[in-house]
Length: 81
Image (cartoon, rainbow, N blue to C red; front, side, top):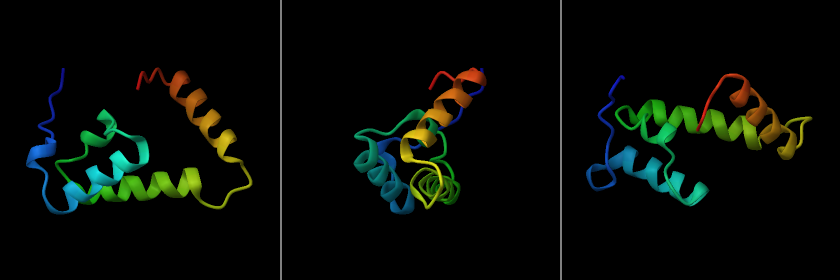
């Protein structure tokens, strides 16, 4: 199994610490998919910006429909997170 050395909360500084704090404010915790991107804060930030745009940006789909699509696609792809 691959291993990624992730940044722990007590090690996080700068952009990484800001992104982890923002993740906690959004979800009440830091999900592993977010933590896996901590070695590269620029990637983490870009990923979170994309997520925000897809899930909360202007769209003909409701928020509920977007969440449902995410669940269906994740299930179809065998994602367990």
